[in-house]
Length: 118
Image (tube, rainbow, N blue to C red; front, side):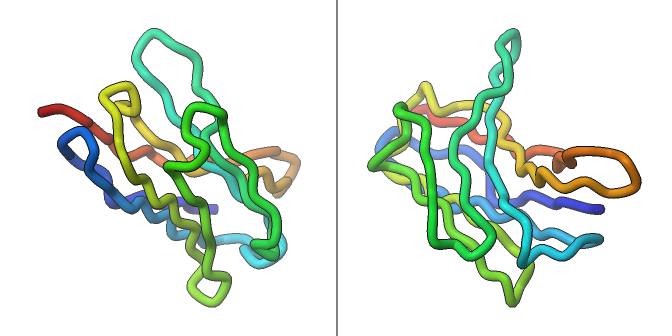
């Protein structure tokens, strides 16, 4: 299983970024997917989740209305569109696949850094 995030970077407050997570090694089209983020010294927190068909989404209250999670099952990729970014959105963003393979539950990407600063 491999999850490769991309799209992070430095952006000014109020700006936008689109994160991508390319998945391989499992049947992506039947897997729910999530984005998490983590700030040093704090626990990793759920940002957004999407079901396998892309018909149901859930968001953390702090990002609702600003972030949108989506997926393209033909490309084995999940996205996180982040608009109206705030300094408090600064974190490492991780893609997560809650799949069970060979007895192991859950796989994480390596993370992509997002810094919101003027």
